[in-house]
Length: 264
Image 1 (tube, rainbow, N blue to C red):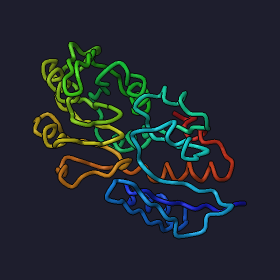
Image 2 (image 1 turned 30 degrees about the horizontal axis):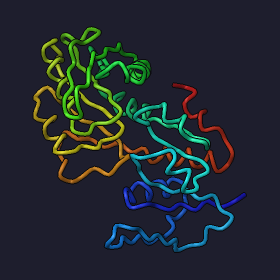
Image 3 (image 1 turned 45 degrees about the vertical axis):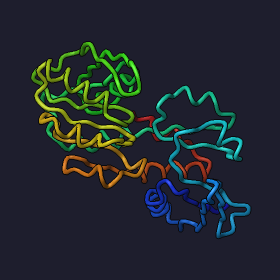
Image 4 (image 1 turned 90 degrees about the vertical axis):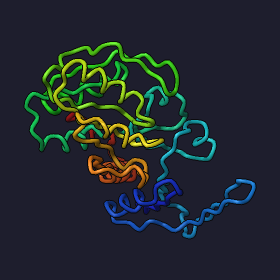
């Protein structure tokens, strides 16, 4: 069987190191140099001929760029829009972090809790998390006006007097979450814990969210590197390194990746 070679881009080398640790293989060295005209020079410092090569690099722009660059398969984690699958002409394995998020909350007191999606678009994932935790689900009726302005007119479902677990796929500026916090307060929610896969946390989002007294905890994965400036004692980062490493192992050995989620 071919050997695995894992390389990292510059976006999140710590995650690449963790994945390699779970796979029991070294992270292969590479040099990335940026020129004054913003061009990049990338040099691989080890042999990868006749090997299965995996590049660990969080990205925001996908599809055609990766295929044009020569990728023959793509492994993703919680795409913001699942329809992006259709833009690839190569196989795509789309992972999610619901099991890791559920494991985190399963060890807590969930009496009187409810899972809430900020909008109907994420309600399917919220419902899946609710099933895994044995909880009811609710959702916000959201309308996006601009990049930094949204309105949530109502909450569909019962949150009065309940401990809320908010699930979203990503948090950037926190505009949606803060709008949702206002509606949850109006509807009489007792406490709020917030979870997302991708903690982008732009412009001090964590501190603005943590300023709400109802917020007990903000949970995200390490799918992207978290800026030190976003640190707060209420921010908890869980790892998706084991899940990504297992998916890489299955791809390398020709096993099913989708089987990872058959019990969810």
